[in-house]
Image (cartoon, rainbow, N blue to C red; front, side):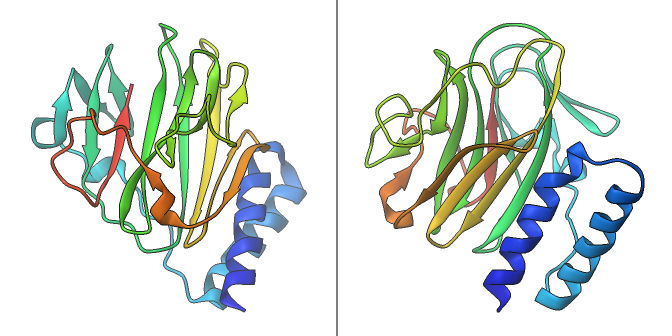
Length: 198
């Protein structure tokens, strides 16, 4: 039952960006009800947890109000160990450049990257060691155009990882979490936290 409630919660949350007015209010109320029915904790705001002086691995990152900003190439650990199953909402806006962005997750106790716009391909960074352009999650096309805010919704379950961007399904991968990994060249210190690469 809890799995069904969490799945429904994910679908409702993914639909929010496209709603306004009464429809949005109804869905927000339903989301609240689903949190209670599934016994889930409320959303955790990760930005206040980040301290660029402590969590920086590479590059130049800063926290500006409620926004984490990267000025070029950078890697930042997000000091949060997620539960076994969770949903992650990230609002992203590319202000320059064309390089890839990676949202680092933890799935099945191991770090996993969701890469976007790496040579115009997005998907899970490594499945059986294969990059998005070589694995079944590969999605061709630009997900993060310049100066356009995008809402990423990532659902992590024990045997599944899914990504939607502004409500559009990019991939819905199902399999054993042991098949997933991150790029081993990414210099991270903690093996069980979320991370960002830009």
